[in-house]
Figure 1: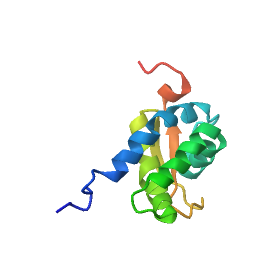
Figure 2 (figure 1 turned 45 degrees about the horizontal axis):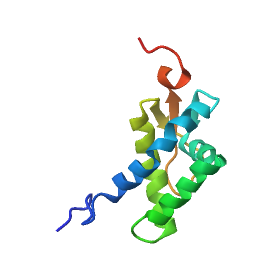
Figure 3 (figure 1 turned 90 degrees about the horizontal axis):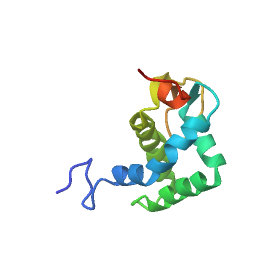
Length: 120
């Protein structure tokens, strides 16, 4: 019997993470501020036509066939995990007062990798 974190078809969250992974770093680089919220990142992601199409496809791919549930997972788990794994930003705290109907926004701070500076 599958555990709560593993579906019989594999881990659906990891599948969405792998699908979206190639589109994350270019958006981080393109964001022209040192700190941003999860919500602002998702807005930037959706401003790029190719990344927006990937976001929409990720919603469609969610195994529950429920767009609202998919957005909860993408905003609350997938995007934060992708930002962490990028190695380009660090979690900087919860973004109180910033609205996202699908997740709890956080602040993310670019590190030297994302700003083009040396990380010696």
